[in-house]
Image 1 (cartoon, rainbow, N blue to C red):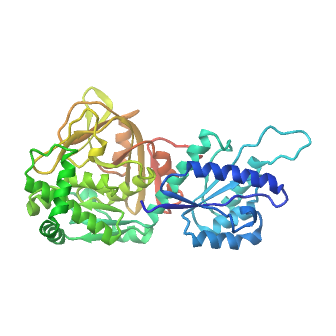
Image 2 (tube, rainbow, N blue to C red):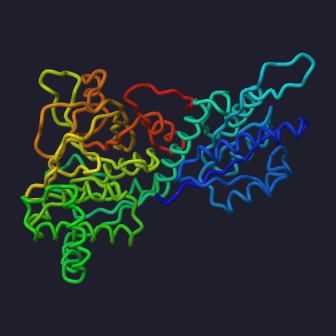
Image 3 (cartoon, one colour):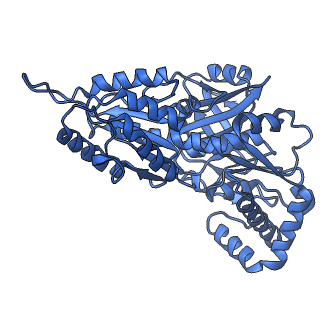
Length: 461
C-alpha cells in the first residue's frame, strides 16, 4: 500500500457558538485518530484556519491550498453544528475528491437553549453538494462513540482507497494471453482513456532472461526464498532445481513490479513458463499475493484490475486469492467450488489443511472458513461493470489444487448474474464483506457501473 491521505475539515455555521464548535471538533478529531487505519494519514486544518474550523467563504483558498499541498485523496467534512452548506459545496466542487459527511448526534433539546442543529445542517449540506454535482458518502447522524460511526468512517477510508487505486492504476502484463482464452481479452486503449489504467507489457523472452539472470547472480537470495517457503509448504515432491526456479520467477516479477511502479500483475502462468523454465508460476501468484501484490492467472488483465480494487477495499488487511468458478457441490445447491490449479496464497490455508506443492509448481490446499467477497471488473460493448457478492467459506469435499467452497443465499441467482452480467469464470476473492465498499466507490469512478449481487445501503456504517 502506498497510503491514503484523508483531509479532515471540520465545518461550523458563521453565527454559532465557537466554543461549542471547538469542543465538538476536538471530540471527533480524537476519535478519528483512534479509528484511523494504519495505511491512512490524516490532515486537519490546525494551524491553517482559525481554531482549525471552516465556516466562511473567505477561508476556502487557505483550506484548498493546505489540502493540495498535503496531496489529500479524500475529504471528511464533519459538522460541528448546523455547519455551512455553502463552504461544503464549494470545497467539494473545488477538490473533486470523494467526500464524507457526518455530524455528531445532538443531545435532548433543552427548552430555551440554542441547539447545535447538526442533523438539520448536514441535510442542507448534502443538498448543496448535489446542486454542485459533487458525489458524496454519508454516515447516518449518530453518536461519535457509536459502532455506526466507527464502521462508517473506516469503510469510507476503504472506499476512498478503492477510488485512489482506480485513478492511478498500472498493471504489469507478463507474457501474452493463452491462445484459447478469448474470455480474457480487453481493450487497452479504453482502459487508458476512460480510467487512466495503464498496462505495461513484459515479453516472455525478457522474463526468461531476467529469471536466468537471477539464478546466475543472486543465488543466496534464491536459496533464502526456497528455505523460507519450505517452512510453510511441503515441497518434497518438487525438485530443488524447480524450487529455485520458482523463487527466481518470484524475484524477477517483484523486481519488475517495482521498476514499473505497477499495482497488480497478470501472468501467463501455465502455457509459457513450464516450456521455457520447466516450472509453472501457480504458487508464484500466491507468493506475490502474500507479498501484497495482487496477481491474476492466465494473463487476465481485467482480473488483475479486479484484484487491485478488491485489495484496496480491504485496506491491505489480508491477501487475496484468484479463482475459477467451477462446480456446485453435489448435495448442496447453494454451495459453489472456487478453485484453481494451485495459485492461492498459503497464508489463507484452512487450519486443518496441510499444504503441499506438486512437481510442476501447483499448490494443493484448502482455504479457511469465514465470510468472503468475490468480485469481477469486466466489460462488453464499451460498458464497464464491477460485480461483487458476499458468501461464506465452508467445509466441503476435498479437491486437488487450491480450493474453497463458497455458500451463498441462492446460487441460481448468482449464476444468472454472472452469465448475463457480462462476466466470466474468473473472480478475485477476499475474506470479509466488501460489496458495499466496492459499490460506493463506483459513484466516484466515472464510467464504472456498480453491480452488487444484492442491493446495498446508500449510507455507510
